[in-house]
Amino acid sequence: MTLNIIILVLAIILIGSILLLLIYRYQKNVLETKYSLNNERLNAEYDQKMRDLELSVKDELHAKRDTMDKELFARRKRVSEEESRMESRRNKMDQRSSRLDQRSRDLKKLNLEIKQKKKQIDAKLKTQFEELQRVASMTKLEAKDELMSLVERESREDMAKMIRNIEQEAKTEGENKARKLLVMAMQRVSSDQVSEHSTTTIPIPSDDIKGRIIGRNGRNIRSFEQVAGVDVVVDGAPDSVMVASFDPIRREIARRALSKLILDGRIHPAQIEKVVSKSREDVEIIIKEEGEKAVYDAGVLGLQAQIVRLLGKLKFRTSYGQDQHSHAIETALIAGVIAAEIGADVDVSKTAGLLHDIGKAVDHEVSGTHAAIGAEICRRYGVSSIVCNAVAAHHHEVEQESVEATIVEVADAISGSRPGARRENFEQYVKRIRSLEEIANSAKGVKEAFALQAGREVRLIVSPDKVDDLEAMQIAKDVALKAEENLQYPGQIKVTVIRETRAVHYAK
Image (tube, rainbow, N blue to C red):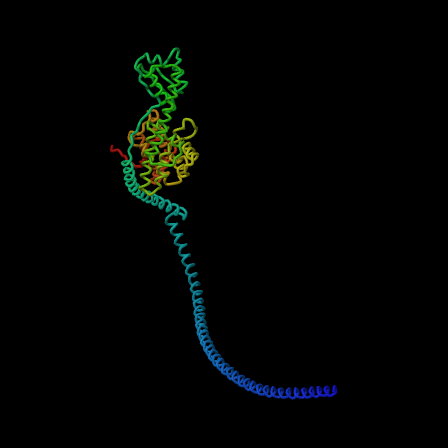
């Protein structure tokens, strides 16, 4: 039973194996058939694609070959044309070279002819020159010197006439324009001039008051002089007392204090000290107010309080009798008008004009010129450098660095030279006139010199045989420059040089 089952199982397995083998072979044959068919189809497609690709490549190659053939033809054509042009150019260069060679040969020949002719001309000139020297009885150097001397004389005369004409035209035109500008500036600006002295006279009602001022054994007057820092003169006039001091502010304080003491009648050391102290405070208030007034009237803003105070002190300072407070304001206004007319900086010109004489507020306390002192004050209190230069240079103590500095100098001269603005004593006037004539007589070739019109003009008479016209003009410039450097004077000085030839003969 068991064996039968085993045999049956084995038979089933064998039959299954045979069936599997048959199925495998069948599927293999089917697959091989499909593969063969697919392979043939793929080969056919591949062959077709290869044929198509070969055809497209051939077509592309033919197209590129045609293009390259066309480009090669065009290049060959251009090369051929370029070779033709080069050949033509080479022929032209050869022709030009031939012409240049021929011209070079002609030039060499011409140079030889010129050298030969030059030798002939030199020989003839030498012969003529020797004959000319023999006839003229003069050597070459003597003739040259004579000719140069004649040309120099004629040239100097022509030059002098030309310079004189040009200077006259420029002077006339410049004077007309400057006169219009300055007259307009002076018309637009006007101020009163107040003259002060170095002494102040105070009237007294009676000799009894004079005695009180002196006090017992001079006690009151000594106390007053010590506290106020002034000198009191009681013997100058019977009905007045004179206060003298080099410091105008001290003199003003003393004048106010003494006037109050005279009105009060109580004069003793304690009262004197009290009244002088109160007068000093009053004057300080006046100084501040006058400084602010000067700044306001001149239209200058931004100045420090110390500078404003110094401007107020100018109220009590005079120069040649001219009130420096009013002079500073007037100079600022004139400078502003001139600057506006010529297109300069108006603010700088007005500021420099207002501050140009600020050094005079302290020049009796500090050594140096008022221009240098004023410039140092301006630098110390932060004023701009251009204003400082204008202040320092308004009397040419340093070089002027801007047009505004020149404007300040002109405005200062206008304000100081107006009629009645300034005055000087007789001794100073005589000294200035004498110095002016000495400067004029020191010039070379001057025979006589005369100062005219109160020192506003000086005339020099020169020797015509020693000084020509050109030298006469130079002498006028030199004398004017020397006067500017060595003299102090209001306004300007006209220098006139007279050169004339006089022929004199006597009938007998």
